[in-house]
Structures are given as structure tokens and as C-alpha cells.
Image (cartoon, helix red, strand yellow):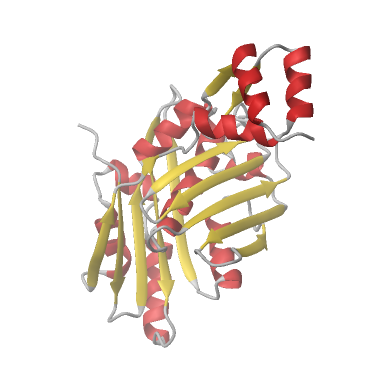
Length: 295
């Protein structure tokens, strides 16, 4: 029986490290199903969604964030929303892209993402203005790009590992990742020990395939000096609804609504995140027209 998705948040080495790890297989499978992504696109979206999900549990209460990976590769833009409750949704501009394996025999994520562009993170922390951070895309492999983001935008040295294993039938076999963040004052000896552990660690999906859990992933890196403070199940969650699209139609104003009614007689609106479609017929559009502000 497939294991449930799980994310853990904790500390290690007397508080010298903040540690996070996740199994996101079901989440990435749902994203693949809804977006109909081809294997390499699945890996790119899945790695980004896993990183965003982990960053989500770094937040509090109703805080949320949006990650945008805008590279020059054929996948176009990758967009993922996540929040502190573990709710995640995401999409890519071009889901039907797939490239031959790279020199290591792995899915060529960097090839579809591109090796130049920007990684943007926007956090809604409940303040007047959102926090925005951006870094150049370092490799397009996603994990290295988030490593750079944490170091430069959040001034927190971090080790990031992300993985998505896709089967020959395009199903998601395993997905997950980890983030280990170094707190100020960590001794150089311990920092060297962490670097050696990261370099020696098997690939995330290899460990997940062997039945390892998010907690045991972290123990590969930090040993038994580990305290888990929180466990969250990451889940796909979209916030679109017919009512939201009704409000969106009302806000475009009477002039635009009248053009749609007269020219098309109906409107079909599509949510990028979940691929749900909402059809509004002529009578419904006329009712919204009467509610809209005059131009």
C-alpha cells in the first residue's frame, strides 16, 4: 500500500540546524494528472512543488507564498502556490514537453527549464506589502536554484535536495525532498560534517524507493540528534470556484460583458491550477451584466 504524503519540520544539533523533509508522491501525482504533464515536465513541476510545500511549512497561520520559475526553456513558466497548512497547487505553461535523458541518464529538467532566467518567491505574510525575493536561475535543476535563493534572498545557507521519479508509463513513482538550514554560530567542524553528509547521501528518490520516511531522510544527514516539531500532510488544493469566476466577469465591466454576449453568447473560463472549466451561458452573462458597474 502506498504511503501517505508527509512533511516534517524540526531542529538538530542543539538548534544549530533547522531541518525539513517531505514525501510528496501523491501531491505530484495529482499535479501530473491535472496538468497532463509529460515526464520531464512532471519532474520540473514536482521538484518546484516539493520545494514550495516545504517553504510553506516555514510560514505561520494564514501566511502563503507563490514560487515562479521563469527560465528560457521550452516548459515556459512554472508557478506554484503553497501555504502553512500544507496546501499546494501549481501549473506549467507547456506541460507537453519532454527531452531525451541527460548524460547521467536522468530526466533533463535543466533542459526544459532553461539555464537562464529568474526564480521569484512572493510571500503574503499578512503585512501591508508582500515580501518578494528573486535570484537568477543557477542551473535549472531546481534544487540548486533554491539553494541560491535561500543563501542570497533569505541570507540562510541551506542544503536542498529534491527528486521526482517517473515510471515508463508516466506515473509518479516517488517524489520528495529536504531542506537543511544552517543557523548562525554553527561550528566549522559541524558545518564540514554536514557538507560531507550531503555529498554522500543517496538520491532522495532512491531512499524513498527503499521505504525511507521524511524523518529518516533527515537522519541520513544529521544522525540521531534530531527533534521533530511538526508533521503535516501536503495536499493539492485549488481555490477556484464558480462564484470567483462570476466576480471576475463582473469586474471586467459592462462594455466587455456586452461584447462577449453579443459576439459569443457564452463564456468558458479555465483555471490554470486545477484545469477545471466553468461555462456561463447567455442568460447567466446577462444577469452578471446587470450587476456590473456601468462604464
